[in-house]
Structure formats: C-alpha cells, structure tokens
Length: 346
Ligand SMILES: [Cu+2]
Image 1 (cartoon, protein in one colour):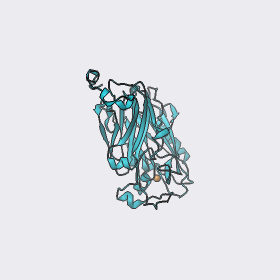
Image 2: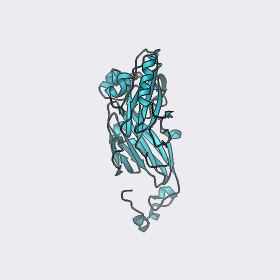
Image 3: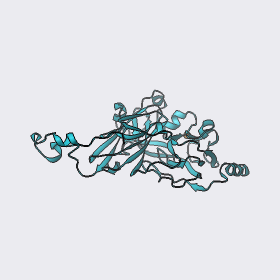
C-alpha cells in the first residue's frame, strides 16, 4: 500500500518542487505566492471536534478542519499539484472527507479522501487546472449535517502572474448554524437536522461566530488603502447578498473567477451557497464600516462584521455638525462638496 501511495505521489508531482502550504485561519490570508512555476503544495488537514461559542455566550460543538470553523485558507497557484493529507480525530467515530470545488474528478476529491478516526492518514494528489477562489467542504452523507456543523474552508488558486498587490487581504466566510430552540437560560446549544432541512437558521455568521469581526476583532485599515476580501459562502442553504456599508466595491471578481477582468463599482454582490467572491475596496473617510449580508434577516441573525478605518477627516466628502460640534445652521453643502472629486471605474 505504501508503495502504491509513493507511486501516486511520484506520478502526480515528480518534476515539481515541493512545499508545505502555509495555512491561516480567518480573517488571516497566507502571503501572495511569488514563485513563477508550479509546485507540489502539501496541505495537512485534521478533523477535530471543538467546543466554542456562536455569540459569546451560547456554546456549540463544532466539527472542524484543524480546530476552526471556517477551516484554513489554502493558497496555491494554477498548475500546482495539491497534495492533501487528511487525518481524523473525531471522537464520535464518524468518517470525514474533502470535496474541493477546485478539483477536477469524482466528488472533487471526496471519493478518495475519506478518513476514519484512528485510521491512517489519507493522502491524495490533485492538479489545480483553473484559477479562482473555491470552497472546500466535507462531503460525507448527510452532507447537510457535516457542512452545517463547521466543515468547510476556501482554497485560492492564483492565476499565472498572481493578483495585483493590495494593502490588506482578509478571509471572511459566511455560514449558517441550526440549533434546537433553547430554553431561555440554556447555554449549550445542540444541532437540529430538522431546522437545517427547513433552512431555518438560528445563526447566520461571518467566520464562525457573531463576534468574529466585531469590537476588538474588527478588521482594520487606513483611508486610501486598498482592501481585498476573499469571501466564501458555504450556506449550507442560504444565498449571501454581500455588502459593505459606506463604500462600493471598486472591483468584484464575480463568483471568485479570475478568467475575466473584475467588474467595477458594485454595491452588493450575490454569492450562492457553495460559492465565493473576491472584492476590493478603499475607504476615503475614516470611521466604522460594516460588512453585512444585506438580507436583513441574516444580518439580524449575526451576519455582520466591522472594518475600522483610520485617517484624516474628509469634510470635502462627508461632514456633519455631529462630527465637529457645530450648530446645524453652520453646515452648508456648497461648493466644496459639489466640487469633490468624482470617480468612474478605476
Ligand atoms: Cu465530515
């Protein structure tokens, strides 16, 4: 068996340099790839069941890759060979596997990656043929349960030549959580397959918790800096109407594709369940901005995060007596605002 495995690895990546994937957890993104030739990239994923919180108070038992929901961000380049190593430390005894939307072949790799607890590490190699931002998730049946409990992440396949440089890159992933209706003082929440089947989530969150991108966890940038967000929506059931309150996405790589130039000046972009997008924006005026699913029920259920932006005030663009302690009568929206620079497509 070991001989066959070695042969498979040799066939898949014999002539490529080999490296370990630098895995990061949301909102962090691995650094851009600087090499100009394909490589074999080893990504090590481990199924772990961990207790965490969905909102700072309610506890929930997450099924995860590497201890986090969402799982690690994997960064690769088109033409790379992804060498996946999957181990399983799920105490329940359940098998788990990996379906990569970036992989060409049965099950996106799930047909050959199933790992059982206490069993051997599963290894498989996949050629990454197409650039884009792609979801990965566990595909063991019932897939609804495995996804709804936290088994997903994203893989970026950079195009040849990479992506344009930006000042900040962030990883944000939306997902729903389905629990039984708790008693008022019930701290530990349990999964409800029936609620998931009915697509009635109790939580819709970014990066696994209502608090992941709020308060001290807010994303940070300065005025004028270019921010890129790799945004995945695993669902498992709901579409995301992804929006940043107070700015417009200058660039949107719709549905995570890099095959065409990005579209410009998009206010809200649609991300299907099991889909992704890449957006870029800048912030001209300092202050707090919100990332939301603009479907208001989803926002109420937790799909909201903050970006805190520092910089000099821009009264030519945005002013109010509330900001400078003036009387309302002192504010006149005359020439300065009227002459403020307007922008077309960047
Ligand atoms: Cu699973």
